[in-house]
Image (cartoon, rainbow, N blue to C red; front, side):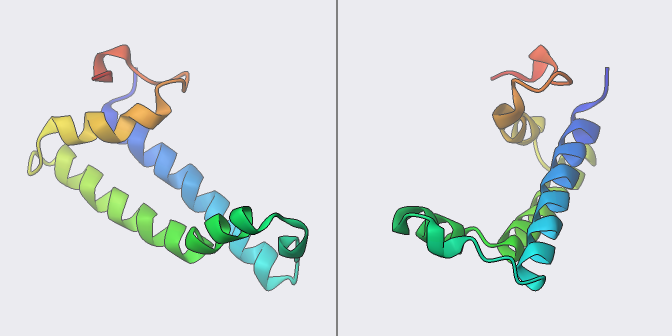
Length: 95
């Protein structure tokens, strides 16, 4: 069983990788935006790869503070909840 910080950092790395791939798609000129409904385009505009990468950095810092004991472990439990269906999720982290 992996510890909470390792689990969360792996999820952040997955998100970061997806944001990097999305950034490369935009840089390579892939344009699928015009085919999407306007509400989806608005959501995507608010969740750009750059924002995703910034969120990954913020999450990484929070997780490091939880692991160091500077933040309560409950913060880590809250961050883990969206991944409850992941096979590596420990039921002990459920809140």
